[in-house]
Image 1 (cartoon, protein in one colour):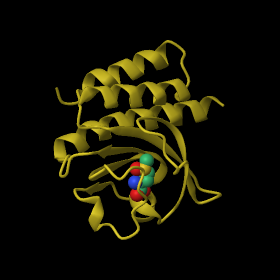
Image 2 (cartoon, rainbow, N blue to C red):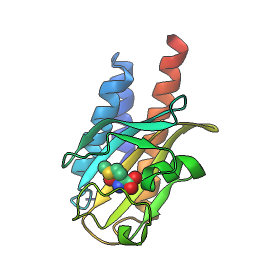
Image 3 (cartoon, helix red, strand yellow):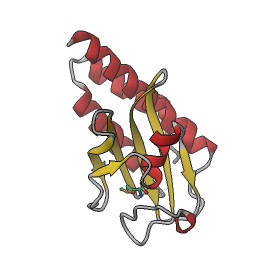
Image 4 (cartoon, rainbow, N blue to C red):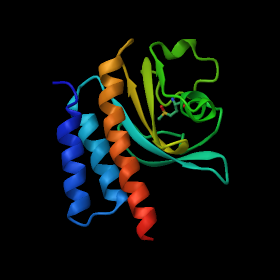
Length: 159
Ligand code: SME
């Protein structure tokens, strides 16, 4: 069954209303995305640190990765921030500066978590299938990323 963004967003909002902070909410988002579709083999949230110009891995489901920190401009993840644009790579072997997590990964999608022009982080998904990601995947994951952005911005206001 494909990812049902509406029900995931609802669940995340319920957590927020129930007093949970952004960390467990981002963990739940990753768990829900990963279990929604067998083609999502690795799902993680990276947060952007604008002072260091790096992405740091907040949480993930899937094989362990060496890429707990990624510089802006590096790999698919760092390119998404450098270009301020979601990335859909249908064949990772064609990406020159690709940062491989596992040799079995064939395609990858990065969806930014942003508040207006400000990039807060991203949801990164790897698949062992080529051409795994289409517009529907991107739209669904974007809704979840937007909900995470709402939670992060609201939490910042309360701090
Ligand atoms: N492949 C990513 C690195 C992160 S891993 O997929 C977990 C990239 O090229 O940026």
